[in-house]
Image (cartoon, rainbow, N blue to C red; front, side, top):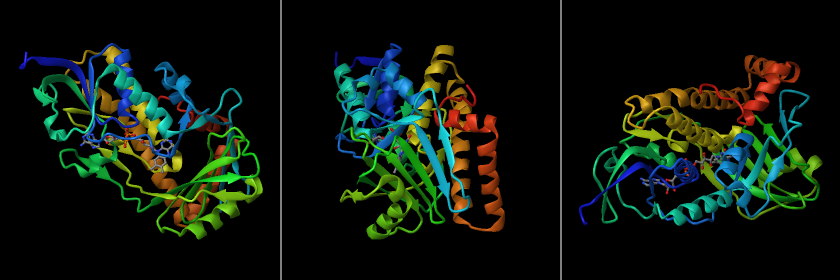
Length: 373
Ligand SMILES: Cc1cc2nc3c(=O)[nH]c(=O)nc-3n(C[C@H](O)[C@H](O)[C@H](O)COP(=O)(O)OP(=O)(O)OC[C@H]3O[C@@H](n4cnc5c(N)ncnc54)[C@H](O)[C@@H]3O)c2cc1C
């Protein structure tokens, strides 16, 4: 049966942190899914993710959260400090953690192992993304396939690929990411410091003694290791005690973007948009892309001709809001002038004093709001 055509519902191009989870969500809904990746990624990524409450629920529903080997580190409190306001902004939620920090590779490994068990993951593919079109006969690994829908989940690689059209917002920022041991307990508190050079986030990471954290510093000017260490010392020595830095500090360029809708593809995760890590929400928004897709599937047939437009109309507002919000925030802090200072002071005042706005902010950070859905 050499020329047999295998009829599938979904092809997912890109088996990263979002593509693998999208596949598991669709399999759970009993669809036939194939996942293809140009690499065979290992589980070496040492970065962490702040997983918000909505994403935790979703991972639980897919049977991933409860299988994790290292215990997630809950975030019970977020403290935001800047160089403009005397008092910090403090966000707490009494009912449940605002988020949990986990190593990327923990989630990734669990998801990949599940896909391997279902035998639906093809790695080291050298096919071009332009070859993947819905309803077209495609030759993959000596078999012919057709797919009703093609999901593009190739991460930020999308912006290098001319077949897909993205609007790029050059932030000019680089992130520097590393880990620290500290002598005081972090008390499950995450910190964000807005300096006039860029934001510095300090997040607790999984460790039983609660004396280990990660830092993400984003700025236009790359500062050297000793300057960075000095900056971190200045900001957290009081709260975290003596610090011991891990040797390696990784560097990532930050290129926020938004991909235009396309009738052939459903873009998810960083293929649809990537945002500045200041909000710590990039991956969480990818989970929301997948959730929106799942809700649409419950309402419409995959053959519905406006299916993709319905998806984009639901995802563009939140993606654009986050892109706009993170860009404006960085702009305000980097450009110290009297009107920007006034805007920042007003923002702090509103968030500190108006409960409805404050609660909305907390719900949004936890992924508990649906802007259009
Ligand atoms: C410093 C930093 C800190 C961050 N912290 C957080 C955080 O705390 N919380 C949060 O929510 N988010 C965070 N993010 C964002 C988060 O890491 C990303 O949003 C997330 O990893 C995106 O997953 P993805 O699956 O879309 O892309 P990726 O994980 O990049 O996966 C893309 C996959 O596609 C494959 N691929 C590429 N090209 C092709 C092709 N042509 N054909 C086939 N396959 C292809 C690749 O091999 C890869 O496996 C952070 C980002 C940075 C840079």
